[in-house]
Image 1 (tube, rainbow, N blue to C red):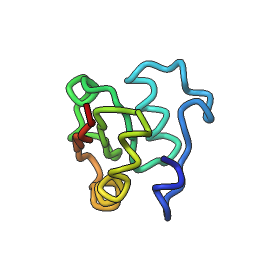
Image 2: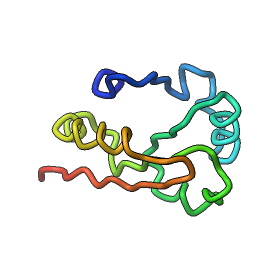
Image 3: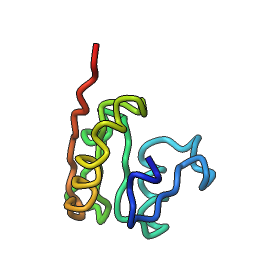
Image 4: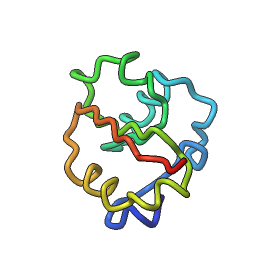
Length: 97
């Protein structure tokens, strides 16, 4: 996914040492580090936080399976490019059965 998001700096929670953080702590760390966007597959995260008071945008994908994501990488990039601070966007990536 990193290479599909050309023009954007991409870091994973794992790379930052945040892999074990729970949602609230992860969001706080992401904001305090100056990130603009959090991409996740956690379908419930948007309902656990008040995004109206956040400077961080949230993009929720329905899968982390690259075999599905790669077919829609342009659509994902468009979402990343257009999302605004405090906005939550859910992007459904169709999966072939």
